[in-house]
Length: 110
Length: 114
Image (cartoon, rainbow over all chains, first blue to last red):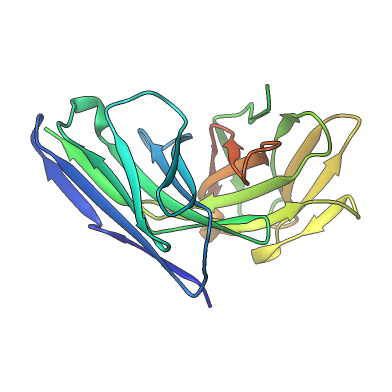
């Protein structure tokens, strides 16, 4: 069966520090992968998606970037965090027209 | 533009009463529609989907949803709510030509009162 992992689960970072969030998927090959941000416990905003290694599409201009160095690995990064980057970050993959979500990373920027 | 609307911020219902969470959509072509549930500090869990076929879709945990093309709606329902159904519910539509990208509604907080 397919599973999706995210780490860390929680993260507190100062403004201006770098960020690296990791997402890995098991039990499937060549998945479509997605990064979402959820602010203040509500609505999801799609940040990036990837249909293959090295292929990244950005949905909104922002302070973040994404990379897919391996087939089942998706990384969300920033060189310098802003206060507005705080939120709950969710990774997802697609199977049979359904998206399956990871457990999320709670990021607090102080 | 492709989108979904969840008009209510919060739905309060007494335990044992029917639960309805509303969703309307705007999309070109045939819609692929989804419902997800989120418990505090957790990822989203898939409940059900409509792709084609029977307008009444049955999903997990006793939930169902009815696709209504004329009203462009996909309301989530449960005949008898449980306290454990208290959570955040999201409606979503698949974007066309979009590599299975989804557009989510803002979410509805459901509170089931014992």
